[in-house]
Image (cartoon, rainbow, N blue to C red):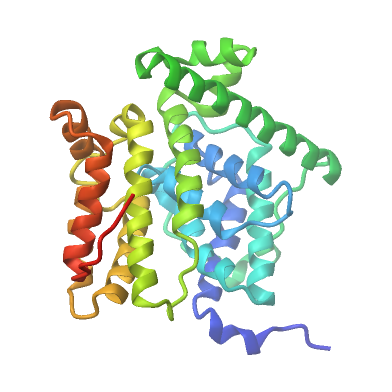
Length: 347
């Protein structure tokens, strides 16, 4: 009896390519040709922690890993791991049986990575064998080496690790809020959380990794509130309302964590290529096209997002003493002018 899923294939035209990427990465991992770096190891841990409760990868978790990896992961081991995650995302967003199976193999790889030590240096790109050859035979099996530890114990360890991760982030957030960025050190976080400094370094790698993790938690909450699925049939009034909420919430968020936002501000060359900015632009463009069908939403959404740049908001609030309420009102007025919505607004 056939077990293929050919009827589902049209939904995911790149499924075969993703499966080949996954097979090749697992094979090279087993044979030592691909050794995860510290950053890739941290991304695998992030994914494993998020899957601890459900036993499966989620689109939100993959987006979080892509955001944390950002452009840096593209230069790790030739970018193979981060590329695989990006290609897995559309399969998980609209899964069929074959795609779910592939995602399950992806989770197996992620969990196996977390059970190894990260490679101290970035491994050189593999030799020119992008896809496994037919001659590989059984070596192309997609099942990675499994830990002899029982599944339930492994899951419990992931839950404990996720709990410790949250405790460290809570301690870091408290230091940042009460004492400022200059006092946020790995040693201070360890002391506040009641753990050894080595634990903090193992979890985040370095201070930059800690800052990225803090920002990621804030980003997750913001995206959950404003970047979930959008009903394409939403009314013009609803689109304007969502634009209002998006900007006002972003301004308040940046005001609360301005030091962290400025510390994480990318260079001008990378600012508009980072995953969060691209996601924001996509959402604002959709809302603006619904709110003002005649406008050039793709370009004007950049103008709207320019108002929300952390550096500009810091300049206006700290150097020009513009109050928060006026900044929020300015956003509402900007949206009103772009959408030609003359109704009065309140924050």
